[in-house]
Image (cartoon, rainbow, N blue to C red; front, side, top):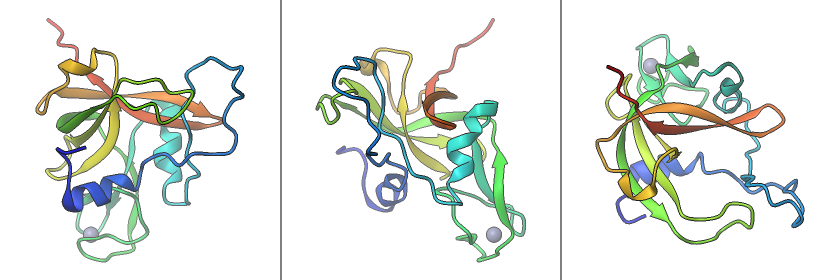
Length: 166
Ligand SMILES: [Zn+2]
């Protein structure tokens, strides 16, 4: 992931899925991703997809959005923070294509990207861009959130190229 570094990488990596023990057996050929074990603060992020909503933490005191989620506003240290729905619109900020088979059930190639959400400059998250050939994804591409069911009530927010409508 040569295009990604520094503080952004540390922030984004918080939401890499942790491999879980309930992966399917080798007989299951379906593409099934590893899924996370959310903390209390992370739960809204991983379950909002059930309602088709991306939930990102926002500070009620200073109005700042922040991600990854946490109990304290990183800008003003207020405790008045809670997950709120965002538009789901974003721009690809950095992108790489993974060609390594890291998980038996998740065949490459696939796009790993950092996207910047429309709500606030610098509000970025690590994700996958799906619904197109990996090679066409570029920085600056406008994308919309979509959700993939991981397991139980956990949904993975991914992004698709925005479809322009006449
Ligand atoms: Zn704040």
